[in-house]
Every structure is written in structure tokens, then in C-alpha cells.
Length: 149
Image (cartoon, rainbow, N blue to C red):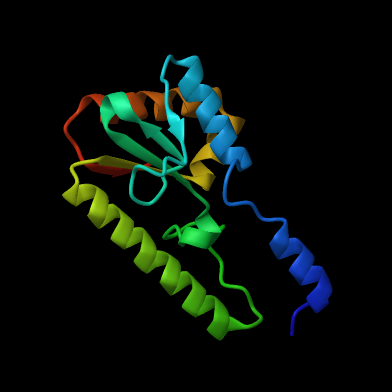
């Protein structure tokens, strides 16, 4: 049984954004401050990445741990109510993410996934922030096609 009424739950779910989320905005500002220029939610790139760096031919996705099922993350919990619905929803999300990555790989577009929990850690600790930015820059300069941070 859900602890919220259907109306409250609907209101909560409607407030969840798919674009311009706080983690996405934070990471975009960091990239811009480091001199990177990008386009947002590019319709020209399969999967409409949150950030696309044309110069580096790189799509960056800022994934929510809950919605995209970050393995081993405390934020990727399973809701207690309507578990059949959620299992189906999460499986659909996983399949779509795999299809997007495969398509980008076939098009030779590099793909970087930044998890929500990573961004939260970056906000709390400037050393972690520097490390993630360095790892991002390393990824952009190398020939690696996929990385998760």
C-alpha cells in the first residue's frame, strides 16, 4: 500500500523533469567553466543526449540513479507499492538505454554517462569534483567509446 494518496503521488510524479535537472545544470556549468561548448538535448544525435560536444563527437547523459537503475547505488531502490509496474518501467528504461548506446557506438559517437550520485558527491567535495572533471577531460581526449562516472 502506498503511503500517499493517488492524487499526491500523481502530483509528485508530474513534478519530475526530464530536461534541465539540477544534476544536469550543475555539470553543464562546470563544463562551460572549463571552456567546453555544447548543445543541449540535440535532436540530431540519436537518444537526444543531455549534452552533446560536437568538437569531441561525444554524447553525455546525466542519468538519475533511480530511473536508470544504477547498479549498487542506494538511490536505485525498488518502490514497495505497484512493484509489477515499476519492474516493467525500469526494464523498459534499461532496454532503451542499451539501444541508445548501441546506436551511438555504431555511429562512432562517444558516450559518457554521469550518474546522479556522482554529481551529488561532486557538489559535496571539491576534490571529487576535480577528479571527475579530469576523468571527463581524459575521456574526451582518448579514443574510448563508452565510460560511466
